[in-house]
Image 1: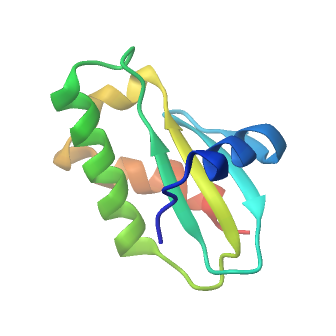
Image 2 (image 1 turned 135 degrees about the vertical axis):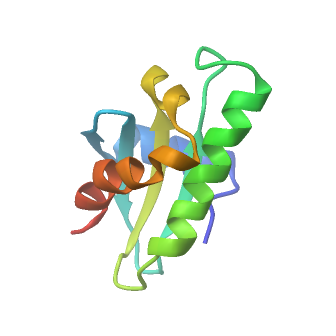
Image 3 (image 1 turned 135 degrees about the horizontal axis):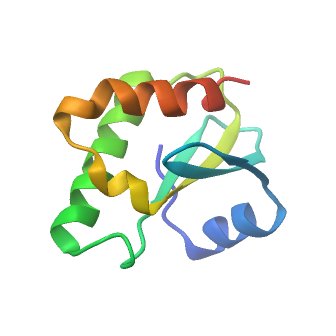
Length: 103
């Protein structure tokens, strides 16, 4: 369900389709297996606490909205605005990402 190899991340970055949202940049690459997700949160976004909070929210979002119909590897890269997210803005996260994840 999650991308773990550096080569898979690199492949998504180099040959994947790129989509921008307000808070994230998404890279897609078609696969024959069920969707896998990877997350990148740069040190430019904030300290470790902020970066880990964003990754936790993204993992929770993926688990709650995962679909077996999606046959892509997806890497989600956080923009600086993503540092504003917390539990209260979780609905806004769904509004930002869900339309982009649906084929």
